[in-house]
Length: 337
Image 1 (cartoon, rainbow, N blue to C red):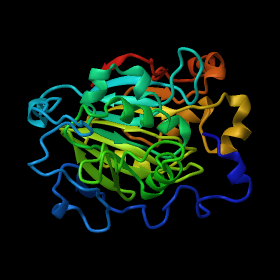
Image 2 (cartoon, rainbow, N blue to C red; image 1 turned 60 degrees about the vertical axis):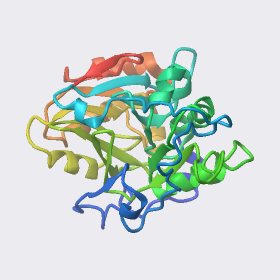
Image 3 (spheres, one colour; image 1 turned 45 degrees about the vertical axis):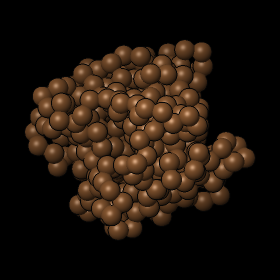
Image 4 (cartoon, one colour; image 1 turned 180 degrees about the horizontal axis):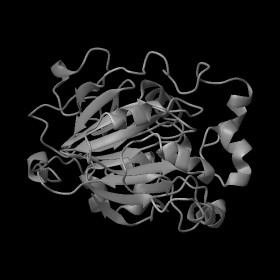
């Protein structure tokens, strides 16, 4: 999102760019388990109530009945498989046929919730166990309320919503607040809620569904993270919404040679709108080549978060770049790495 109004009254971040640019830089990621018991939660994080063994019923189901089987493959069955990345929404806005930012990894983990409720069937939505939000802007959280409503009464355990504390606070206060939408973190009750918020600090590495996801601060107008998603000896890097940034590439450069299989980098506005991109802290096609040059791994680069009205213009500018590594990510395509 653009964030111009707030930025005009002063930056949300300290001078010098991305949030935490001083103390965060050089910090080692701290590992959190998304499936750990409440007693194993790292100090300083909040967790909602966790259903115990006696809670074997579909959450939200008034009838109870026989437990539903757990959806999805156990992480141990993923050994040796490619990472499967399905593009549910490729854009930083919406027009007919153009859905907002949303990616599905290995059928169970969603990165940003711009369009999961409209792009996935009901059965596919039921399989989702984790949602990772890079930040709080509407094009990244838009479908989360409808997704939760769709799976009501059809799951055994709360869906975990992972993000920075600042992002989760915004989502709780301004979205799931019983005014805009019901608070499904306490429905049907606080013992068995439909969703469970899992705040984590920058540079946290969260283990979930066989993945390791590291949340790295980037340079946007609200607290935002890019993501390094690892499974075994494979990794995918998501830039999140950002202007030129540093810490994300430093983390990626610390991975072994050949591990990074793809970079997904935002390119929101055409080159002629560079002043707007600078104010709103986004990238344009002319910034992509110097930006990806900060990453030492040579791999395919996929541009995403394009504003739909400028798609053709941005496509032409990307095709004119002095590299053949960059292409626009295809919505509804499943990539395997």
